[in-house]
Image 1 (tube, rainbow, N blue to C red):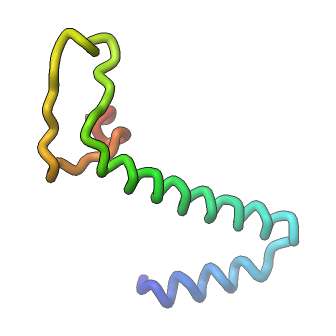
Image 2: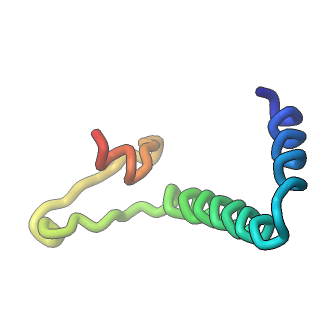
Image 3: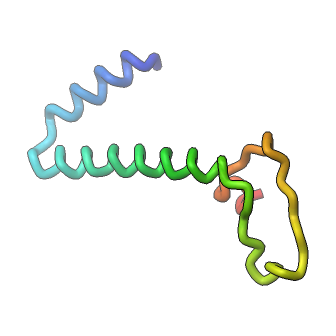
Length: 75
């Protein structure tokens, strides 16, 4: 689907919801945007905690390394 098709479908489905469900859907969209913004901010951070190994080992992650914490944990 193209972006326009998705936007049109979302609008069509959204109009069929009750006011309460529209508010819940809006809250969810805002949550997704906030989560994306937080993820982008975290990508710029140079340090990650090493948990139990903190202070015992050092780890350098190259600046072009791109993986989310969720992807890392699932690997």
